[in-house]
Image (cartoon, rainbow, N blue to C red; front, side):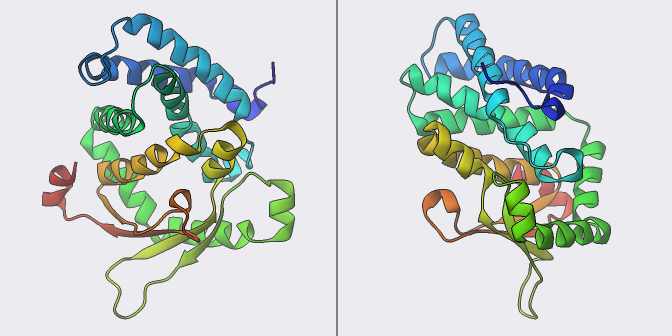
Length: 234
């Protein structure tokens, strides 16, 4: 069996704990929407598949890359999708279960902690970091060293724009991973988790197209949700 990259191995315990929490949160939905009965067996299949996914996760720079966190937080949903797909659960139903499970998991965190993370993401300092990493991602040297990484541009707002900044992803690490392992059909479910993740942190994400749907790029546009709308968006 392929080995897990040492960077992900150091985070394995935390990632597995997050997966077990998701399975607990999804239990009722697996009964009521997926019509599955032996939830313990399904859970073990998911954890076994997650062990496989861990060996497939590409190394994109570890702690030095903001995209490493994306892989660690979201790739586990590919394990859930694969197992439920094998059990005949329709892909749209899988997506609903995953979004609601992720939402419940995120909202279990203290609100102050979530919103502080959102402020940090929107901060000038973080925007500066994203500009730097975006500029690096498009270089031949970076793409040669990390061929499975994301490639993206930082987007500054124009005079008529309402967003604070944007990211145009021209190549997606999840798309590359899905293409290698026959998961293109479940890829839109992973894309759908973005809205849940940002709203939980008080951030409005607007996006009109994705690479997964065949577009030339994913157009992420970010702005802050007013405090009184943060709960409503969730």
